[in-house]
Image (cartoon, rainbow, N blue to C red; front, side):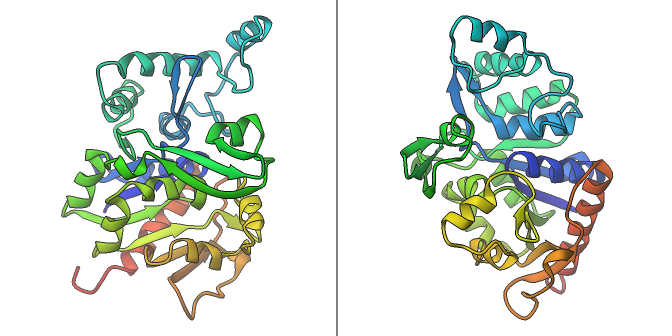
Length: 313
């Protein structure tokens, strides 16, 4: 079945990797959040695109959860010695991606550069930025408005989260490959990966046309919860929900995606309290410990989506 997956960083990369392992290359488009992108030391950094790319290329560091495996840090050591900004780590192997991307972007779009870099790493699936136009996530906190990477990396998510806005979203257009995926008559499912619904999926949905296409679709849209038993699997999702006064439950995820999803996949530890209202529920083991778990869960999501297809489709 042909699938469009919306993904952020680590969790999105894991599920995308599982989907890539069981779907033919031409049947998977991964639309990736670029609200986290920023310019650092003169280089264009695209953290979520890189997380997905490295995962599908088998180059990701599974222990750290970001960056390239078997990394070295000579550049950062030299930068620190010279008194440069060292709050955002750039490994030596990872640095090559950012240098090449920055040079290529002088004459090509982010979509074209992303596809080029993925092809150079042997990736056959379509990894697509949510937009070729700049959209930047700004976090409203008790310390004022912060650029995403300042909030996430420099301050380690310690400021109290109040809200998020997406600068440039109103003028942005979806990447052409995303619109092509929606228009493809073979598209059978939209999947919202277990990325942070506020920090990672909401920026994608902020690009005019993407949310509207999902709402208007006649195929199932399913989401995978990022929570297990009231805790985020990775990242600050639980902290942010708590600071917004939202319970850390599958019901909150369903509310975040109200009007968008037909099905929600949750962990068995969270029960099935939504079964009588809201989206259809699949309760299973959602922890992706290794590639085998990624593929198992991806297959369960696809089977779930097939069951939710309208009769006769």
